[in-house]
Image 1: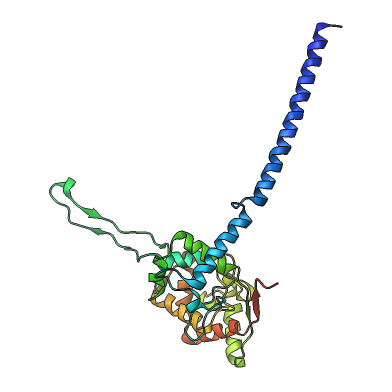
Image 2 (image 1 turned 90 degrees about the vertical axis):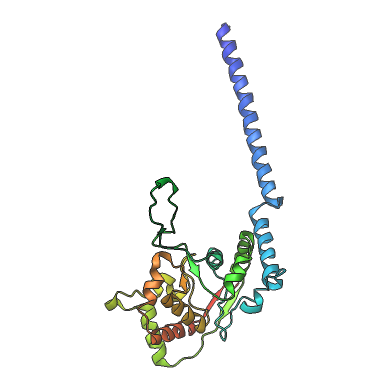
Length: 274
C-alpha cells in the first residue's frame, strides 16, 4: 500500500470525526436556544406579559402622584362620550406610545433668535431654534400634558402594550338618514373638487385604522372626534404625519365634523374579540 493512501485515509477519518462533532454541537446549541426561549423570563412572550401587567397596574391603580388612567378612560379603556375622552382599547401600541410622547413634549421654538453682531465676533452670542418644517409632534391638553411628563419611557411602553391588547366592541348608534348620508360621502369620497381625500383612504376601510400612523375613527366617541378636528384647526394639535390631518381639518365645516363623526359612530366594530 502506498504511503499516500494512508495519509488520505487518515485525513478522511479526521474530517469525518470533525464533521460529526460539528453537527452534534450545532444540534446541541440549537436545542439550548429553543429551551432558553421557552423558559427564559427574557423571551418575547414572557417579556410582553411583564410589560402588560405593569401597564395594567399603572392604568388601573396609578402610582404616587399619577392617577389611574381608568379614572378618565374607563375600566376597559373604552373612553367617555360625555367628556370627549378617547378610547384606548385596541389601538396600535406604537400609536399610543407616540401620543404620550407628544403630550410630554414641550412646544418647540420654530424661529431663530440671533442677537446683533458685536465688534468682537468671537463674543457674539447666538441662539437658534428648531427650523424644521415638520415638528416631531405636539398635543396640548390641560391634564394630559402634565401627566405624560410624569411617565417614563418604560411607563409609556407598558401602557401601550396593555391597552393595545384590550377587547373593544362598539354597537352602532342611530342617526337620521341625512346626517349618515353626508357623513358617508365624506368618509368614502371626500371632497375631490377641493382636493380633500376620503377619510377611509388614510384611516382604512370603515375607518378601522391603518398601522401605527392612522388610528381608527370607528369606535371613538363622537365628541372626541369633533374636538380633535377643532384642535387641528386651532393648532392645539400638531403631531400628524407630514401635516396631512392639519390640511384636511382646515377644509372641514362644523357640519362636516358632526356628519362624519356620526357616520363612524353608526358602524359596528370590534377588536381583539375571540
